[in-house]
Image (cartoon, rainbow, N blue to C red; front, side):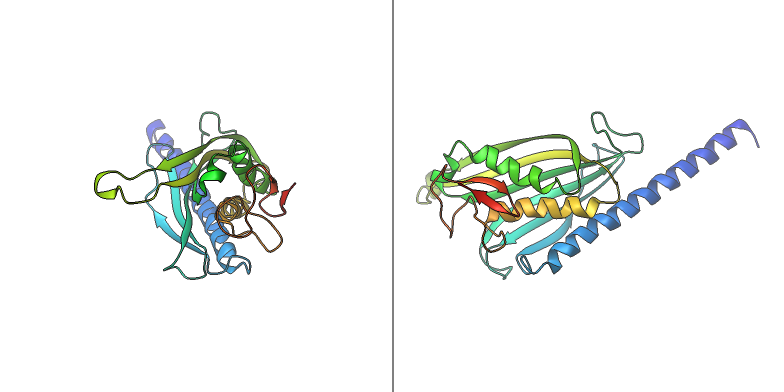
Length: 227
């Protein structure tokens, strides 16, 4: 066997190992989606679908989109949506601190007075980071944006709407077999943005219970907000 044959064999082994690791990661990722579907607090509120993953960010990628419904009926009251992308690079991406990277997007409608609250960005970011404290995270990065949509021309009769958008990426810290927990953390952030926290918590968006902008500051999407 020549040197070139040996190299090719080694590369095939490396590729096979990488594919196997990524397949296992996707299985764990999807297990997180099933946990959300089965959760009593959110049963029927979430719907998921696979979507095309970006091809240029990493050698391997998997993506899912989520829609959150205020009622347990997928045909009514869509109040939030998002996407989560799992990236895998055996060599590790620049600034990743891991072979895995998660890229998230969250969008939810909010009342105009809430969109104007200077704490919205801080509160929205805390929904994600505090949910991620359970699995552990590192090298986080992201933005929170307030969006005002106004209609003109044929749509001039439509009332202006305001929304909240969060874009973030992070790497899992600790066990790389905890990707399911990262998925449920992203869903916790979506639930908080949509106002679907478990009973006894408060949401920073439209619908009961209402809050005065700036009155509450979220301590966790799980434990709720404090004065």
